[in-house]
Image (cartoon, rainbow, N blue to C red; front, side, top):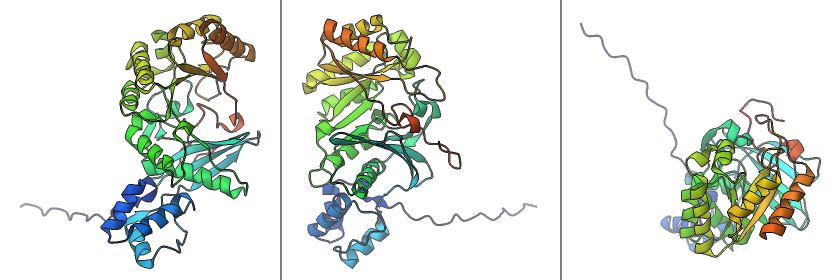
Length: 368
């Protein structure tokens, strides 16, 4: 006798996902309002609340009519990211924010203050798939891409933090140098950059936005072919294929010669300078011979090298180069090859907010 099938559980109804307003461009917001039968003036007021008022989900939006607010409440959200932990560096200029995402993932963003400028370092992914050996984010592995709204919301959060100080200072620079590989999440990052540049919103100038890549060749070429106006920084770290692949595993997929071809294409297509980042690791890539290899590799390009003394991470045992090694590296690049370089000012190392140190801890874990 055939047994009756067990009763099937009926899944609970799940509300349809709501549109994140911080992930919409201004024309898209206007089109949404028009599709609801509302005027462009309502969309303009909402945009003003989002980017001049830096609106949060709990804000009343008093100039928006009740019928518009009801529709917004039902179908959209203001994607503010709650702060799990805020950490302040002893340097007095750096703050790191551990931010929560709607699905429980967490990311880190950093506010760095310098004389005359404020910079937000934002994440493009939860984790990273590139696996650079000295990077804490690479050591934690890849979790997921961020949406454009989650990227923009980090910048909005830092802008709110600046406003809360009561000082007449606004965010000047944004660097996609936080957790993740921006060119691995190309579409969301470029959408976020376009939103951040809108002159009626946060109005960040294109030359105040920098994207740092470990060397995703198709993304570099796509940036060039699409004439993206933001700055490009390429994490080089070694001037031979063998040495680079040992530090940056993605070099096995996109070898050094292919990467340099893409960089030349970028510079030629856009007639623009390119930045190269070089993490100085004591005794590994900081010798005079290494400096000359860099000069020969990039000397024909309109380029600048950002020298970054290694920041400590739990998963890598290297040490930063001493100051004299960094100065020698600079002298060789300048005097022998005419290549400009800077040594990056170290900020927030004591709170793991420096380059290569960002790594969101697991939920329920300690944060230090």
